[in-house]
Amino acid sequence: MIAGGFLATSTLGMSFPVVPRLVSGPLAGGSRAVGVVVGAFAVASVLCRPAVAKLGDRRGHRALLLLGGVVSSIGLLLHVWADSILALALARGAAGLGFGATMVGLFTAALDAASAERQGEAASYLTIAITLGLGLGPIAGEWLLLEYGSGAVWVGATAAAGAGTVIVLRGLPRAAIGAPQPAPRSAAIWWSSTAVLPGVVAMFGVVAFAGFLAFIPLHALDVGVDRVGTLLLVSSATVIVARFVVARSARQDQLVTIIAAGLACEALGLLLIAVWTSPVGLWVAVAVMSAGWAVVLPWLVLAATRGAGAGERTRAVATFTMFTDVGVAVGPIMMGLVASFAGYGGAFVAGAVITAGGLLLTRPLTASPSPIPN
Image (tube, rainbow, N blue to C red; front, top):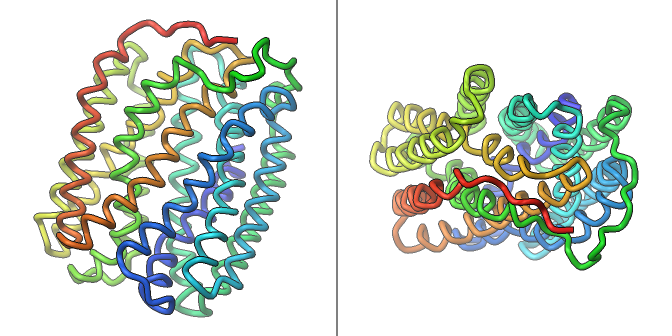
C-alpha cells in the first residue's frame, strides 16, 4: 500500500516544477493563469467527492482505487496534447478526478487496517509515502522536462500512475479491501459532521502550502536557486523526518497541541520565505515551513476519523479530503491574485496570514467527536 501510494503521488509531484513553467513559458500565461491551471486539479477532485464517498461505502476500497488509477492515467496522458491554457486546465482536472478517488481509497484502507491505538501512526506512515512521492516526483519531472521535454514528463507520470494502481490492488491486505457496504439509511448523506471542523482547519494550512508549491518554482528562480526539484526534495525530506519523529513519540491526547504548533511553524516558514530573499534564506525557510506542515495533516486526519466506525470511515475521509482539495484549489488562485500586484513575496506573506488564521480554530478540536450521521 505504501509503495503504491508513493507511485500514485509521485505523478502529482512530477507536475509541480513543470506546470508553472509551461503556463508562464510556452503557453504565455501570467500568475493568474498559473493559479487557475494548478487549481483545476483540486477543483475537479472536490466536485467528484460526493460520488467518491458513496462509491466507497457501497462498493468498497478496491473500486475506488481501481477507478482512481484508471482515470488518473487517462488524465495524465491527455497532458501530452494540451497546447493551450484551457486544454492544460482540462487535463489537470481529469487527473484530479482520479487522484481524488485514489487518495480517499488509500486513507480509508490504511485506517481500516490499523487498530484504534495505531491509526495516528498509520496515517503518518501513509502521508510519509505520499510526501516522498511529492518530493522525488519533482526531481523526476524536472529532469525529464530538461532532458526530453514536457511530453516525456506526462508519459512517465502515466506509467507511474498505472504501476501504482497495480501495486496497491495486488498488495492491499484482505482486511483493508473493504467489502461492499449496504446503502446508508439516508442516501442523501455522503458527508461526516465530525470531519468538518478538522477539514476546515486543514484547509487553512493547505491553502498556503498549495500556493507555496505553485509559486516556489518561480520565486526560487528570482532568488537565485535554479534547481527547484532539489529544493522540493529538501522540503519532503524535512516532512518525512518530522512525521517519523511525531508518529513514534506523540500521544493522541496531544493532538490539538501538535496541530497548533505545526500551523504556527508553517506560518513562520512562509513569512521567512517572503522576507529572507537569499538562497541560504530560502533553504532555511522552506525547511521551517515543511517541518510545520509535516505534523498538521496526519493528525487532522486522525481528528476527522476518530469518531467513525469502519463502515463510516469512507465518508469521514471523503469529507476531510474535500476541504483539503478546496484548499489546494483556492490556494494557487488566491496567492496568484496577490502575486499579480504584490509580487511573490506578498503572496507568501498572505499565505502566512491565512495559515495563522487556522490556529483560531484548533481549540474546538478538543471536543469529543459525535457519531457520524447515517
